[in-house]
Image (cartoon, rainbow, N blue to C red; front, side, top):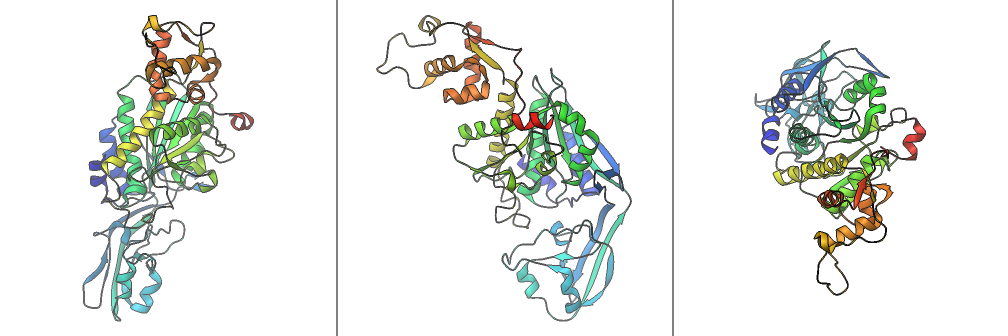
Length: 437
C-alpha cells in the first residue's frame, strides 16, 4: 500500500482530468474487476451538475531575474485547482491577489481550489512569499477548462446475498498522502482481499471525486442503495500511525456504527470519538436526510483536525506502512464480523457439561476460569438468548466478536449453540426504520 501511494503521489488529481484517470487506471491494474466510467460535463446530479473537465499542461511563475519561483511540475499543490488559462507579465503588487500562503504555517504550501468560480492562482510557502522581490513577474497558466467528463471507478463483488456492504473513497486531491492517497490504497488492498474470499454479502467499492462524485452516484443509484446497503464506510485519512478516530452516521446506531465501535474498542483500546456534527467527507452525502444510508468512518487522524491537513506537509512522511496496515486490519475485522453477524441461541437448559467436550478445565482453578476459551464459552452461552446478533452478544459477554468467531463455530458444531437464520439482523435501528429504509 505504501509503495502504491509513493507511485501515485506526483499525479495532479482533481475533480476531473487526466490525473484522476491515470490514478484510476493504476488502481484498476490492481483490481481487474473495477469498471471505470465517464460522466459528461453538464450532467445534472440533484442540485448540482458535473463541472467542465480541467487539465494542466504547465504552470509557473518566473521572478524578475528569470528564475522559476513556483512550478506545478515541482509540486501539484502550487497551482490553485481549476485555474483558468493565463499568460502575462505582472508587477509584484498585481501578482499578490493571485497568491495564497499560510502565515501560521510558513513552510507549508496550502491546498486551494476554485471549482465553481473562474480564477487563476498559485500557492507557495509564506516564507517564500515574504521573500519575493519587487519587479516584474512572468506568469504562465497553461490549462484547459472545457466540456469533457468526470471519471470514477466502481467494483462490485457479488456475494451469496444481494444485500450489500458499501465502501467508498475519493480520488480527486493532488499530492497529499493521508487526506488523499491513504483511502484509495487501503480500499484497493481491501478489495483484493475481499475478491479472494467467499462472501456472504455483496460488496460495492467506489472510487469517486469527493462530493460531486458521490452526489452524482447517488442521483443514479439512491433507490437501489437504500434497499440493499446494510452497512457502509467512507475510507479516508487512514494512513498515519497516530490514534484511531471514529465518526458516526447521522443516526449513530446503525450496523456500521455498532461494528466500527466494537472493532475499535478491542483493536485500538483508546480512540477519539467524534459526532456527526464533525462530518466533512462523503458521509455528508450518504447520510443526508433524504438518502440516509448507514455509513460511518474509521480513520486515523481525522480530516480538518491534524496540523498537516490540506497542505504540502501531508506528504509521504506522514503516512507509514504500519498506519496503513492498521487501518486495513480494522476494516478487515469489520468485514469478518459483518460476514458472521448472525443471531445465536443456547440450545440447553442450565449450563452444559463442558469438560467432556474439551471446553472446560477438568481440574477446577480457584474462582473459576477468568480468561481463555473456558471463559469465552461460558459467557457466550450465558448471553445467547436468541435476541442478540453477534455484535450485541459479544458486547453483553464482554468479549471481542472477532476472537469469538472460532469459539462460536465450535459451540455450533458441539450442538450447544444454534443459529437462528429466520431472525432478520437490523441494518440499523429506529432512525433508519422511521426513514423508510
